[in-house]
Length: 220
Image (cartoon, rainbow, N blue to C red; front, side, top):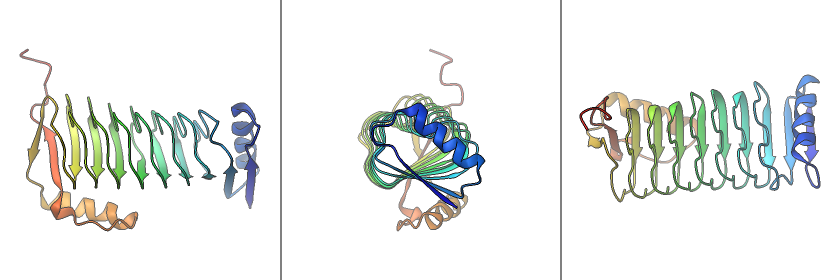
């Protein structure tokens, strides 16, 4: 059973309440139109298949805890902030701070990303098919960030754990970040991601970035 919500002239509380009512009533798919003015749309969901057919505001899919959320448009700042599990797909561009503080789940962006992608990522897989801004993976402590386009300055600044893969060029590496040879297991894992999201890329060509030290704040 599909349920459609036209968010035109509706506030966030009304739309998020309608989403939860539809899930409680067993909706298999929830379609949302005209939601570009809403900040915090579809936040804190534990289940459901949500499809937004418009741009969205800031904090879309924040605290996602198991839902599948697709945005057919551009997303604002802090997409999927603090996500623990689930899948968030954007068929468009995302703004500043996509995927910050995430503990798990997958974010797939079929477009470009702003600055601070995956900052303080703790365990999510974040894939961007386009270009990214500066400070990708700042203070990252786990998970993986995969970028097929070019990246700006200070990639992996103060990274502690996790991997960053880049197919294009990067302007500069941040503190405690180094380029390291890509391994057979990395290639296998990347191929699985690419197959799952129908990405046309060769993982063997990607650059792998990792921490220099697991204790970057000591000895200064």
